[in-house]
Image 1: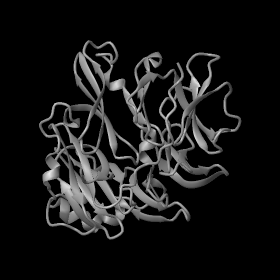
Image 2: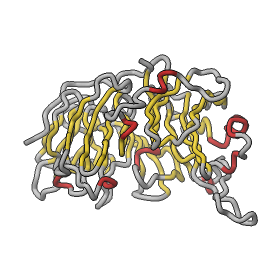
Image 3: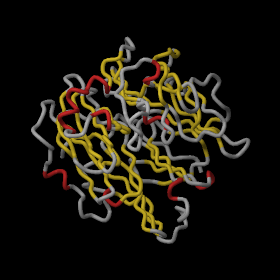
Image 4: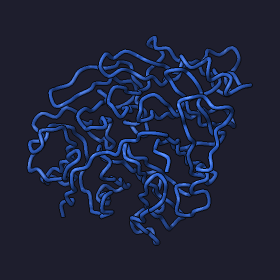
Length: 384
């Protein structure tokens, strides 16, 4: 059965006050208010206790997937052999139970770590990847309908129907039709592959390594399959080289690329070995005489000029007091999320036996607030 068509969709702008939502292994899901001015000490709001005791909230989830720009998320709660897939808005006001697998018939009990949750470019469809490709399915966010998904989305190309860029998904069965996922439009089937793909995944890849702008007009993508890579930006007219020596994450390849809502900013991770300003990071167990390890670091770039507007190395003066008495060079910032306004940034700061979620205004270098706990997933959304 082909996927159900969905009406045109426009991502909800995340204007006004923003909150940092966190999911931790200590059973907590909540948010931190993030204004544009620095606050005193750690920020803690009553809204932070959202979902603290609910067994159906992301506080109990094994996996969390925030939508790119729409104020919603998906999460998988596991209590083997039982597993539940939920979709909710960021206030958890009306969470919807999509899959209630009480006997381990849908989600394999021995393969929870191999399950992938991915939102479509327009945040209207949730693709659920299971250990066996034949079992994959898609959930249409507007209706909650669930259908089989026997395709792998491995190309970006122009759509002959809309004239816009779209995701093209190859059939897992030889000779099958291609599925075309239109941005803000229906999913339809094509009897042939795209003629001139802009992006094409390597054989064996299943996770897309691209990130779409909020309006669906542009896509930023990696030019190699793993490790260091270059980044290009493409639209319907063609593509252009954008950034070199970029670090491509192993787990979710597109996570290192993040757009601002107005498409003027792009956050990525650069390789400090190529002269990009990054912070030194000493391995926790490194000997004193060992050379410091220089991990990839976060940077914000202007998408028009390609100019680096900010690098994590520029924030040393602001970060050090916030993380005192520990020296900044001993922290690793492995996870980050760019706010839709492109001005604020949420980061996960890790140190042996310590983790903290911090919010900063990269334009001023100010620490806006933080959460002194083991943050495991970051997302931005409006306050209720």
